[in-house]
Image (tube, rainbow, N blue to C red):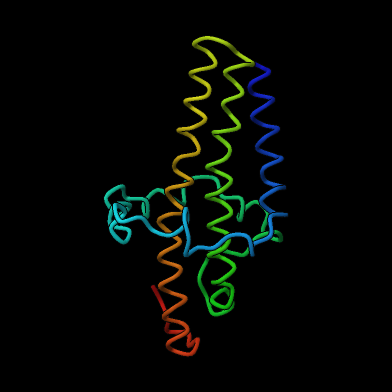
Length: 158
């Protein structure tokens, strides 16, 4: 069990560094897997899951490492960072999709029911973060498009 916990902590730390170093130009929010799927129905799926009410209760690396990531609060200063924020949702989604795949190694470190439970919990623990990115990215894209149409005026809100 301890090996699994140490392994998951290590891949979490390594994935954070990879996410910071990953060139944003490699990620395209308008292409698979980041573009919205038809079943998401323009975000209505996530509204049914009430993501807006619980997303801020989960840990957020941008609150912990403010100097490494753009702030998520919208104001006149952060509106210019919208394209970067959209790319950051792609980075976060990518990392939270890859973590459970790397977490499958726990099945080898802890054979049997314990490894299965840890792996399943690790997958379920990363899933909300993927959903949050898929919910927020189209909203940020709409805000960015509105900002571009209005010439970046402060009244551009989502």
